[in-house]
Length: 55
Image (cartoon, rainbow, N blue to C red; front, side, top):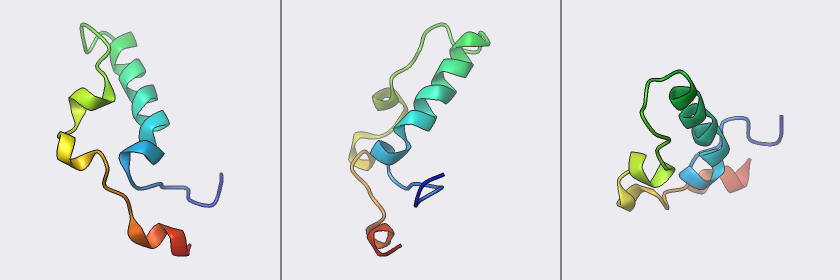
């Protein structure tokens, strides 16, 4: 499972978000696949957990 099972930050969590977007689209809950950038306020994209480097 890796060193950080619950990664913090959009870049670290991108694979999980992409899979969730795929499931939403496949189940017909969205007419198109959204991009991750469409889901988050631009000012939050680069947020990271400063303490995660100490794990």
